[in-house]
Image (cartoon, rainbow, N blue to C red; front, side, top):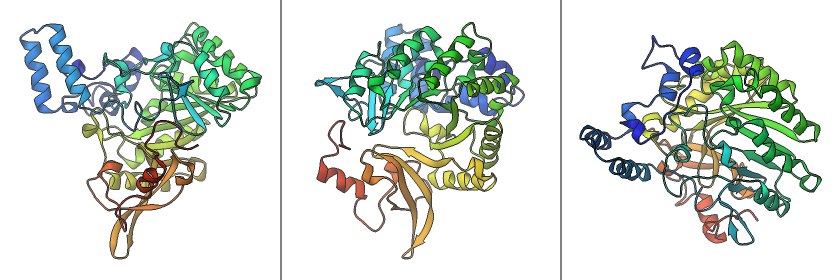
Length: 411
């Protein structure tokens, strides 16, 4: 019933190497990859079940599924309304440009994954929901846009998962970024779950060696190649083939940064994060982000209150050495930017959240502390009310500067 609405895909590596079937359904990787009944509201679940039991026509099931999907906030944080850049007045739907220095690129061939995470905030990429998919079929628009925007230093190739593509196709997207006229693009990032879900991509797949040569070419061209690797639980780092894949990628000169959201039923314990960061560092990777589960899809099933998220982060942070304290969080990728929960404090006899932004639509918002009234049940920025003011500073600033207009608010 759930997989009629939310995407489901798994593979042999996950089933054989990562899931402890004696712990199902409580095993964290099982929760991470297999749909669960609680991911749909009871009314929606029963509606889909009724349609299936009476063997309704496929278009009726599809219509019902799409109606549910549209209520699940399929593209949060202004992705469709504020982040799509323009070139010569023409929108570029395969790109996102929210932060001044960084452009996201969604290559058409990379808009699926080796397996799907049940929490994925890009779940709308994998269902047939009209007008909801980001994809670019070629890199020409990306190159032209970058030439017109010398402030961009980073390109994040994302999806889906770019590493689902064969090397030949991936090279067609990356090589245009290595030319002299795009020398201002210093960092090429690849957002991927492949090191966890299909490490064979870098060890035993037919073009495993070929893709490593591509990575070497990027480094040789003077660019920084950064793998933004999604590892949600320390068990994902246990297989020998995963550790070999990490070694082989790092040997090309690429760096690997590990990040994931905090997910109830998967990694909502300090020891899980401390073990993940410690093991990652021992393998030569850099702890980067603990995210807050976004307000989309089945987030009510997975969401952890912000107060608890901060407790988990702080407890895990205390247990690791300075080499792992490169990690930042808990961070909400919300409309104004990456909002971080710095802590809980008592100020003027009021209990408040202390927050700032690690990244923002407007650079002047970055690292500016602000306060919200403490709410033990709040799971997202929109649940919070400002403390000591009627509005958050960025809401007032947005009104004054018309920052609610599409792309370019930081110019």
